[in-house]
Length: 66
Image 1: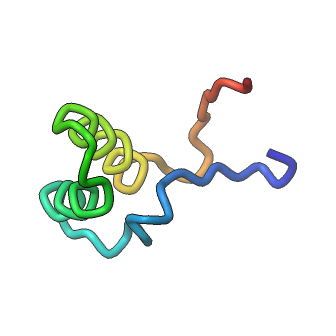
Image 2: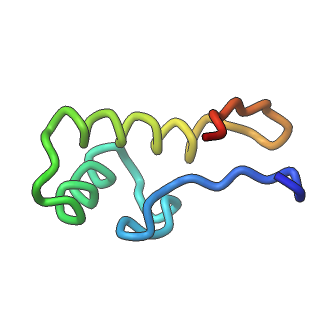
């Protein structure tokens, strides 16, 4: 926050730019999180894919602070 940056992802999946489509990302998530339900994988895939492909420099991001 001090540098005005937002970074998301799970280190188990690696660099999101290496995925050319949602299916590749979903496969990486399934391989990284073998015990997680398909619904959780689908939710994570959607969030990560949007972050990697839709959010642009200057967009506002809202996040909860606990």
